[in-house]
Image 1 (cartoon, rainbow, N blue to C red):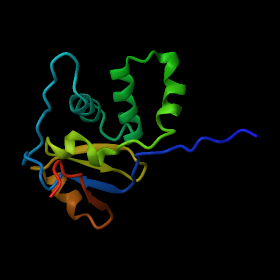
Image 2: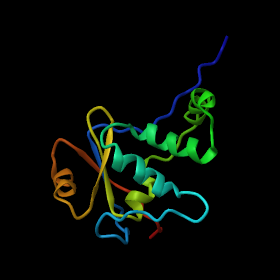
Image 3: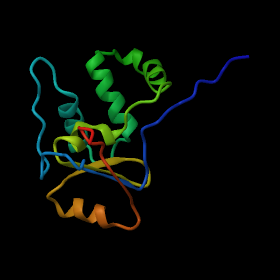
Image 4: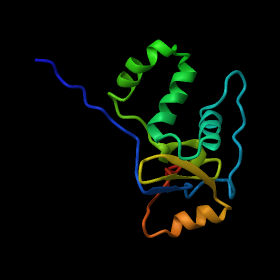
Length: 142
C-alpha cells in the first residue's frame, strides 16, 4: 500500500497580511538586491510587484526557492512536491511584510498582490470587513 504524501500550503484566501508591529518601514520600500545573489525579499518583490494577482503564495515561495536552488525545468514538478511535503513559512514571515512595509493581499482565488503601508489600497484592505486580517510575524520577541 502506498502512503499518500501530505501536501502543505502557504495559501490564504480573502486575507490581508498587515505589516509586522515592529516593522521599521512606514511605507513600502524596494528591498536591496544582496551581494552575490538576489535576496529572498528582492526575489519576492520582483515576482509579486510585476505580477499582481497572477500567482498564489505557494507559487511565489516555490519560485524563489527554485531560483535560489538553481533548479532545471525538468526538476521543478518533483521538487515542488517534495518542497510542499513539509510545512513552509507563509508570507506572514516574509521580509516584505516584516521589514520592508508591504501588506500582502490574497484574493478569493488565493492570488496575491502587495500594497505599501502608505497607500489607500493598504488602508482599504485593513478595514475591509470581507477580508480576514492578520499581522506579519514580529522580527523580535517581546
